[in-house]
Image 1 (spheres, helix red, strand yellow):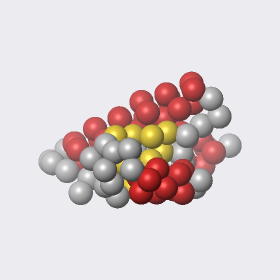
Image 2 (cartoon, helix red, strand yellow):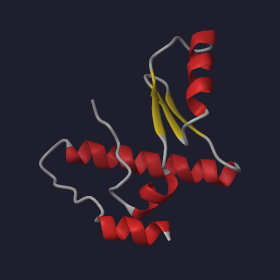
Image 3 (cartoon, helix red, strand yellow):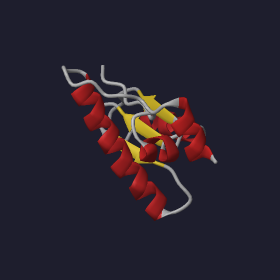
Image 4 (cartoon, helix red, strand yellow):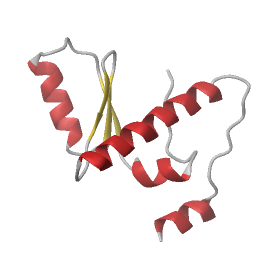
Length: 99
């Protein structure tokens, strides 16, 4: 299982604070809607297994930016699963971004 993390890039650390995964449920079902609805209360980005990505934000621009960032994170996670070594942001860098 690839698990995107948010401490690989500045943008990811800034934009994706709360990531949640939803289990697979058939499209259009109450089960999928209920799980996504419940988890979206505490997440910026939801990954719906076998479906795709759902982002939450203050406006459409913020949601679209999160989609771009999570797509990049998925790419990084894929690269990290091989021989390419990714270096996480230092604590100092993360603190600087949070200021």
